[in-house]
Length: 250
Image 1 (cartoon, rainbow, N blue to C red):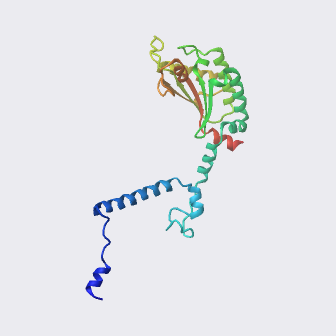
Image 2 (cartoon, rainbow, N blue to C red):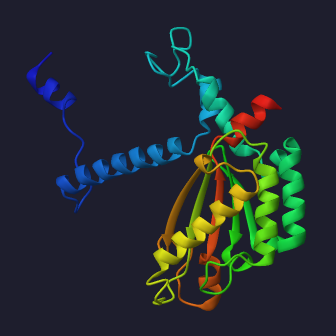
Image 3 (cartoon, helix red, strand yellow):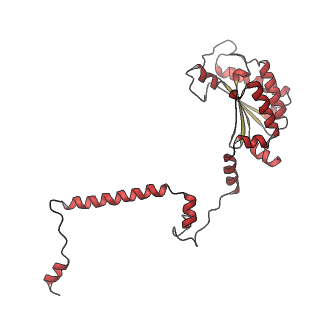
């Protein structure tokens, strides 16, 4: 083949009139980058379960997305599966599961009102939250008659509980300063002591109770208006590991 013919065969197609070569190269590169990021975004929105089912991966130890035969199966610990299932269940399930809890909630709702208590299951722990105003006098650690009755009901419920009890006492940020209560932390501590003593009178051993007085710390809302301050004045009763014990004992 002659030299002139070879030159004709490898001749590069001329660029469009008025265009710069580097601009064409830059536009191609930007188009490739855009395509790459679009693919990343679209892949991040895949249903992982569907992706695994269809393609057999990606899995640890797999040599490729389509390599189903040599992939190492993902083994999820049984405890993690159980925890995931528990988190999907609502309180109504546990209420039906535990007759003592159901009876307690019925009594407290009649006595305190549904809007004044919170019941939740957090990480397998049962949490019962009661507004301090329903148990104690204003800026005081004296239990009201209603508070004494509430603690009696709690004592009846807790006597059948074999685990420990955690009590957290919170106040608002009202600038309290008296000879008895120089600040909110002292008020929270004295209220906590009154709660433990009342439960002890109703059959709950003091050795089973862990008390924490946080005062105005850790408010659930900002202490800026009366409604929010009232919300922050609360007491949390927590039963660690309640879910596991209830499921085990049936």
